[in-house]
Image (tube, rainbow, N blue to C red; front, side):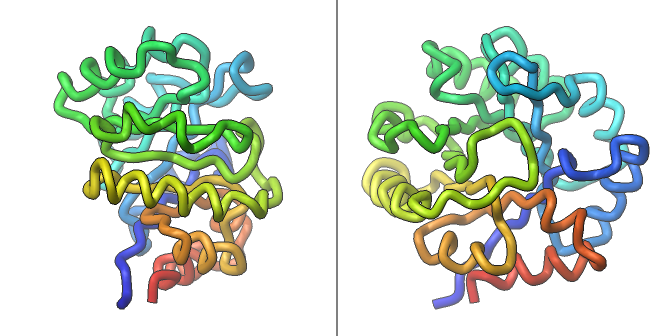
Length: 220
């Protein structure tokens, strides 16, 4: 049976001098979400953008803003990103000892809450937070930079997460980020992914809108 797949192009791979144009390209495409990779140079070895950029671009899109915090001390900023225009705020299990508190703050703003895990983090650590989460983000590369190669055993982790969500919270979406393209997407979807994040594949494609269409068709 065909499944609806959400594509979330990552503006990490867009031209930072023309971010509004990148957002407007996504607006015209089949993508339903826009993925914002927020990096602090500490939790990951790269720095991108913060609340002011998300807030500045919020008026230019009606798409779902999917904000992924790859930062230390996310409890200091998660609520602020929700207020800045995020529709969903995802924080890393590895960076947040008080996930439930952050979840309450984000949901207190009427927004959705997600939790992410790095490639070396076992899926089973999510068992106690899945009942409260709207999304689990499985990183299929080590976070910090775009254009990395998909880590092959990520598909088995996705299956484990899918089994847990089906048991504990069937409404919880599974998102996968890292090395997603037309070659890797079908296996990721077969393993249980609902949301595909793609940066380099989309923005590096000669026809980004066509690349998004290809990913959106991965569930057929």
